[in-house]
Length: 217
Length: 294
Picture 1 (cartoon, rainbow over the protein chains, first blue to last red):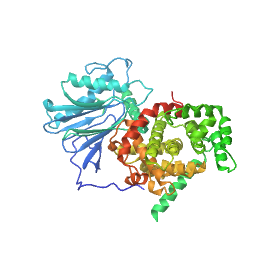
Picture 2: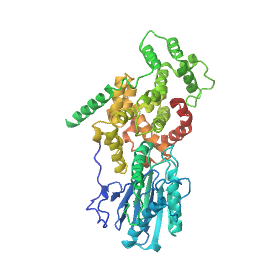
Picture 3: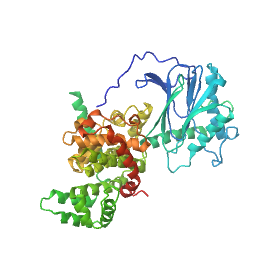
Picture 4: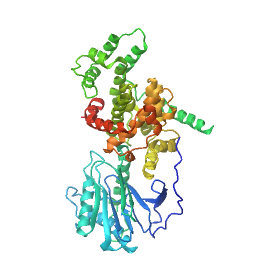
């Protein structure tokens, strides 16, 4: 039968949560001896504490961004909706609706880091995901990767590391305080469930018109 | 004793689930013919050859397998009689099962995993179990191949019959940073897991006890009392198959291996790399032969 999960170290109460992130589910992760927040497609999370943030990525992208001096940082999880000109490369400066979703995802994360004490000059970025997890689909992962790289270059941010593309879904766990990220490739048993989750998310954003102040996350 | 009751409940639930799938998934005639002959003390290997030859499509594929990287015989195997004599009659029965299982289960579709992805994991497990079996000695590598190929068949039954709870279980695994094993999430969502369902199906099909034990106990090797060695090897191979799949050799990337499994199998961690690497070399050819994938 299932073995009880060994609890290491006294866990104490979860670290304080920043305003606006109270809805994010957090739990104790004995293996890492830390609390970790779980984000889903379309969500993001920012913290000033030594806690982890994790998510599961198929063809979506997560940017992990932090202030390398103060350790304030966070993670987002997004995908660009399909557009009529899906064949073209999407750039961050482009004005089409799809790129705007990507820009929102990146800006919300960065703005919340800055609002909570981060400094723009100290930001460092890692990006993950964009896998081609369904063989028959067009490579939507690649569009997401290209967008993220382009955004980082356009904004003059430092891209410290990336693990993107290929055919695997990924489980990413990020600790903004130290900048440590653990990426685990997931077995293909999970592909369809992850893809379905991402498709629900992309359908939900495609159904909404993009407006200037709409809260997308 | 509560744990005992839990186990019984699990078996009852699993038995219920496989009861009505007999019309959807049936074993091929050639396997049943060979099985009957093997159980009949008066039959000879010539009878087995005849039974195989009655199925020309199977005969052709049997020769392809006999000439594949799986066996590496020094000379070409060009007749069914030669294949039966060098592979062995009991092993031919296993091959008849292995070579048709993907087709059998095509009648049980699901939306949770593609058949390609499902069988690739199973074939990795089969190939790795076969290599580990050779390294461990005192067990039959061909039997282990079949056991590895069949170890997760209960999953296909669950995915087809209880898609909602199965999806719930998979989401729970992802939600918990993959620390909860799939079988534990299934027990929580359904009251039984894919190993119990596979075991029930093996019993319903009267598969050889060694296959039944490997399927039913690959996550719970302590319960395999008749064929502990084989169950331990399939348990290890299941984890290593996941390494082969994500192209890693770090055990941290695979579900934990029960330390007792190494002891029971008479193997140690030195066996990991050669088995994973060999399986990665062989997978493409074997995938074509066993699942018809081009």
